[in-house]
View 1 (tube, rainbow, N blue to C red):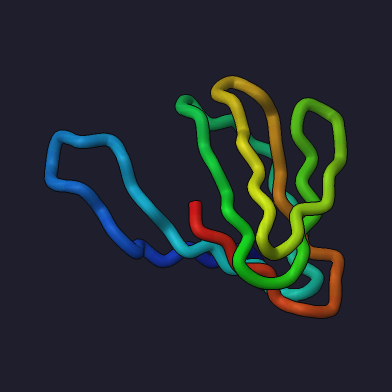
View 2 (view 1 turned 180 degrees about the horizontal axis):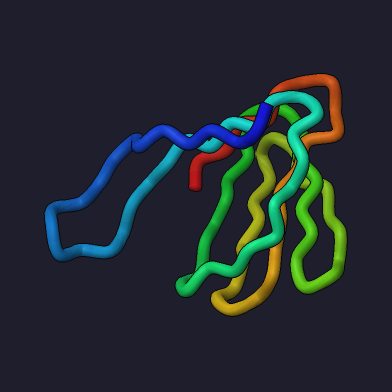
Length: 87
């Protein structure tokens, strides 16, 4: 299973902020991409493996990952439990 994202809260039209619940199933592979604005993931369950600008970090429940704009990153779940984050 690939990543799933559910809209959790979206601000009124014209505002670019959004909050999502991101779920990665066990075995989900990361898809390298770039965001145009800073993106923050706050892990709420499980562990994910993030690769940001070529450096790999494990993101665990209770921790956060901040991805700067214009920097290649991916988020994968090679672990046996689902990963969930608010982003």
